[in-house]
Amino acid sequence: MLNNGLLNAIGKMIFKFQKYNVNEQIRISKSIISWINNYSKTRFSDEDNLKVKQIIYVDFGLSITPEMAYCHPALVLKV
Image 1: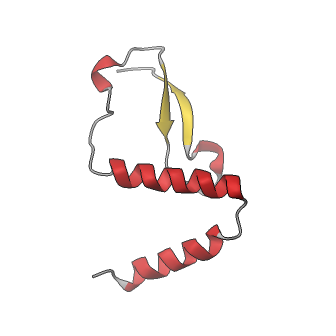
Image 2: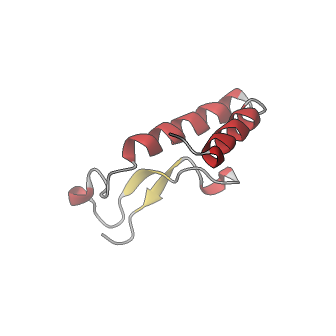
Image 3: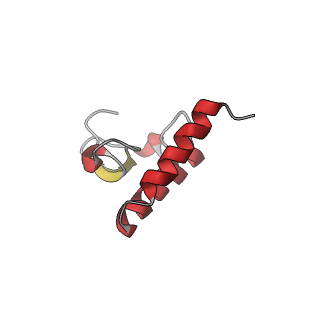
């Protein structure tokens, strides 16, 4: 059973979501789906093949400001 805090948060999220433009709604949706699909994973899916100076695509998740949220390229500094 879901607790009231979670239900309240989901309700607020749906209310705010409707105010965003379509592109922002798509970015948020993709990020939430990625989080749901990857929540239980403890490793980067291709961790064994990572190399320093490699550019990878990382989902930084949701954030208050979209600057470091959603999916962005990232540089591997250390494996």
